[in-house]
Amino acid sequence: MGLQHSVWQAEKLLFKPCTPDHDAIPIIYAFPNTYAVGITSLGYQHIWANLASRPEVNVCRWFTDLHEPLPPEVELVGFSFSWELDYGNILQALSALAVPHRSSDRTSSHPLVFGGGAVLTANPEPFADWFDFILLGDGEDLLGNVLCAYQTVRYAPRHEKLLALAQVSGVYVPSLFCVTYADATGNIQSITPVSAEVPATVQKQTYKGNVLSHSSVVTPHAAWSDIFMVEVVRSCPEMCRFCLASYLTLPFRPADLEAGLMPAIRQGLTVTNRLGLLGASITQHPEFESLLDWLDQPAFDSVRLSLASVRTNTLTQRLCSILARHDSRSVTVAVESGSERLRQIINKKLSNAEIYQAIANAQAGGLQGIKFYGMVGVPYETDADLADTVEMLRTAKKTAPKLKIAFGCSTFVPKAHTPWQWQGVSPSAEKKLQLLQKQLGKLGIEFRPENYRDSVVQALISRGDRRLNAVLTLAYNYAQAEGKTEPSLGMFKRAFKELAQTVPPLDWYVFRTWDTTEVLPWAHLRTALSPELLQKHHQIAFSYSDSVPLPPAV
Ligand code: SF4
Image (cartoon, rainbow, N blue to C red; front, side, top):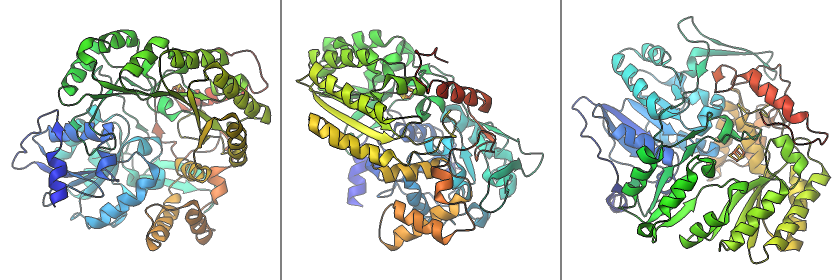
């Protein structure tokens, strides 16, 4: 209790929570991980502040290690879900709140369980059985619309509530859709609403305002201690073919400088001197130079500045020197590969010459290090492409010998709603990671690979359908029995073995390249680009697989 008290006491709030009305809706808003992790999520903070600013709501926060006093007779339990393997913590939270895990086992005496966030917006199907309703897309307007609809059916039977919520654009009620399969382990045949009253597709919501999110609370107990975060852009216009951060959140939207960013930063810097600029591609904000000029004033000399990501060919010497003067030692840029051919396939519009210029700028600007981010297992990747990556890093090292160079590397994981959703994981990716480890060690470049087995689990979940729920549950039970917080790949494999004949095998989900005519698990859930346009981008990407001149961007 003492710990909880000191954690809440240490929070510096940047908004004024409302006093709830006497008949306010009691809501638990949970993050399925610790306080330190959850409170560092800008998405979680943003939605919590939105709820806490409404007198019609009585919200309390819940994390795996602490929570605010729970209101009696909770009506809604919400989860912000941004990391797939946190799913076990959702099940634990439901158990702790005495709520059945499966939506179909809940009665009118139980709260409605809802979720939102990147994992569910991309592909909610593996988790569909646990949620009564799911919010797809940006929460800004969606949350108000949901609460409004809920008020009208607040005292109605459970089924009526769900039916009413399903009428709200962006609200997905999984139990109101029926999925049929060719056979127990075969392809999906159809996904249809259970009645004519349910819209046949659900459209992800896109917030159209020009003021994006920023921290509503600053605390020393966050994973990024005492940081004030501000969202500079949402989505990314580059549309690299694998990239969920771009495709899932399109269109690209920059925050308004005068109306949004500057006032937010001014307010944030009254309680801390640590500033984080967030967004998938910050330097592509059309007024990024003006923002930089403004941040470069003497009044902000003591500000510690960090940037989430920088597009490689926008890493100027000036930006690097401003970062260095504001306590940043290094910068991260995603290059994906050292092979220009592979970058054409990916739609990454970047040349090796631009990479060398960026690294020279980083050194001249006074940074101490640079972290490149790359990927193996990209479709059509050859040994020659890997050799190009090693060569590119060798040249980079020669270009900026004083800079500490690291190369972070993941395995390509297919994600829903991207042009490469149909592609399987490359089984040779693990060997490629080992090869890079060996070769880069000789060059004195620090290699930071992501665990291949984790990528396999990620791919499984990102391409899963509702049948996967049984596998997730069993793997969670195995992890619980062994006192582990997350199931391992071995536990998933055991679960598949036990459930053989009732679900397709792991390889079917992870490694198989799907036919573009198959019904996808998320076929009824729509994002900014139509499935036809995604297929077009898919075809364009692979038309460059034989090495051709730089294609026109789409
Ligand atoms: S530049 Fe980065 S954020 Fe943008 S689409 Fe490519 S990988 Fe995604």
